[in-house]
Amino acid sequence: MIQLNPIYLIIALLFFAGCKNANNEASIQSSDNAMDAARNFIRATLDGKFDEANSYLLQDSININYLQVGKRSRDNATQDTKDGYRTASIRFHKTIQKNDSTCIIIYSNSFKNDHDSLRLVKNNQQWLVDLKYLFEHGTDSIQPTSKRIDTIK
Image 1: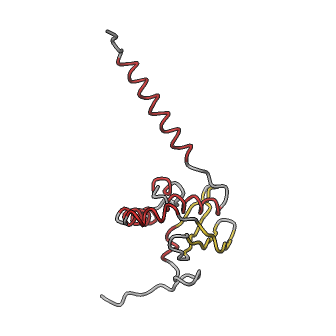
Image 2: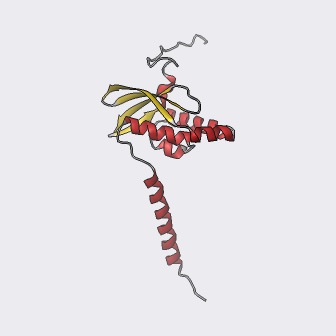
Image 3: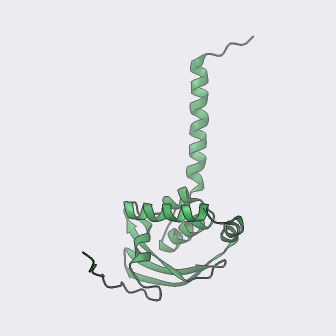
């Protein structure tokens, strides 16, 4: 009977765990420009890969919360809806370069065909999606909406 030394078993487990993490990191594409970041983010969300989409997201509590809301919405969708999003293609309609570190991309997907927009910001030489922009402007405009004052006290 062969007796395994626990040290060799631990080394083998660490090796296989390291290989798994290297493969997962290699599958996430890098974004060379704003369009690549938008495409990678949208594709990941359409495919239901929210952990991957999070890697293209500007990391702050509001953006993370919006992404989690999107994930919960997708989790509650019917299988036909999930399949529709997964097989959808991305259509880019307009790109607005605000400055060298901010870009707005108007897009839709072939499943719902609703125009929407993403703001991308360059942070530490990397283009990232800022979801807060979705809620700062009107549905038919790329101009910010005015702040509303709550009159209920």
